[in-house]
Image (tube, rainbow, N blue to C red; front, side, top):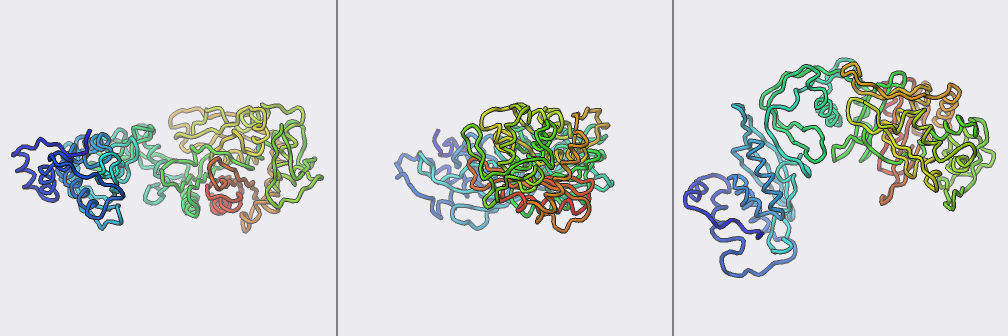
Length: 543
């Protein structure tokens, strides 16, 4: 299909367009001139980046057609006319957006910012709509024409692939989500809670007792995520939904994750399993704190140490030699650069220094098998069985039973092991109390859901894990990050290499009193360098 405008233009339509404001007159004159190469004169195919005049002309024509609602024409000025026509059609037909006026800003090279002012009208209700976005003009690969590089964000900055805009009566009533102290939780006050609040509304809007209103929303058809409200035309009656969130912990978490890009943190109350805080610093809106799947690095040594103790391989004060290297089925594992070997090390010493080789050496001891770590994670820590019911979508962790090099790698949180910050906060909570309490964000009494169960740890195992985490926080790799925190504290650091990434992921999990928290950031470095300060900041609030 050619990238020119449609050639069938009748006089009546011409009169309407010329009479309109904005780019309408410009657009129809361009259509009559046969911009798409239909004038019978062969135009020379251009190459290289579009020039300043081309950028201005292309955006002017695109904006004019968009304003007039001639979506096929507008789409013809893009490099993906089928996708553009679908979304621009939904803009008018499904989102009920009219009276569009687009004002371009000053171009930077081939990128043009602009503001859109319009009206949303539905079922006798209407409200003004205003927002800013930007587009880029590129050279068409086959035509050589200057074309708008089509992205959903051209229509609205909140739109991503497979998203669309819809105005209708709300699918679910609004909620007034409140924290454990009764104060309201809003996106404005706690920005990274946005996706969480949307998910809570999607699941509990009707149960909370509210009535729906009329809204313009982003519908995420591609991933099943709840709608994202953009504009309320008619207020519904919100139902009140009580969550387990601690506003003080949440505020600390929001501030802490801003220090590092692609960071997430979760805090839980070990004595109950209640989630006290969940925060993400991401550009994609993904709740990685609950749903992330990544190798947890040496924070996994909490579970591995529990496995070694429970199976009688060693104990906190038992032997766990730390040689310079360890070989498992032809694969050599190393320690962090600069770590001094210690052939006389105890498990506590190797744990607090995070010696990889000590754990690699011990996972070959009898009675351990390829399934031992999996069994420990599932039966003791409640992981990997896809049965957590937190109140919103969450990942339960994955510790598959594997042989070969991945069995050894799994012992130090690499290989096929995957966790989220929520999982590791729960691991710490189980380690220090001995009891697995599935984390939750909304009381199970609201919808009679059954929380996951697990055996938990023997009292002696939990006591040893807690002591080793205390040593790590006060004398080991977590000492710097946890410095200045009073009370009963403990921690474990971790870093995990990720294929294709130049930097390692930084992990950290710790406790202070009856608060356990875990964080992950893609900033790299050892766990104490990036994730550590995030966790420490949340623990400092005391929940």
